[in-house]
Image (cartoon, rainbow, N blue to C red; front, top):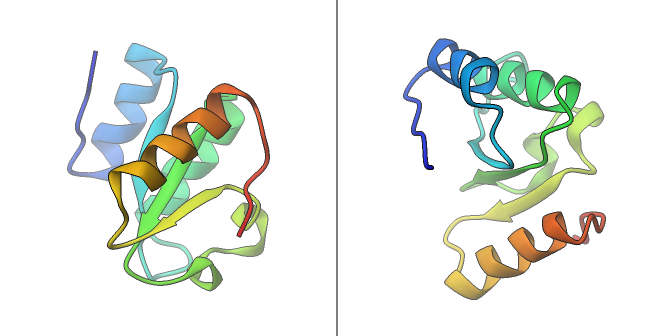
Length: 94
């Protein structure tokens, strides 16, 4: 099943309602922005995720800098690799 959320509130509800196996989280440039609220909830629920952004990993607050991260544009191969790292429970490699 795939669930798309347009707002942080929708994403938080989806985390509670569907208990996803993994998630893709679009970054916000605001360090206290909605993406990080969602990421915090995913960490608390032990749900692995991949940040995606048109910026580099430095936009992430320190508490999330070891999460999987893909900079846009990224290839299908890069996405597959990130998903495989999550499935194998391997750490992010910048």
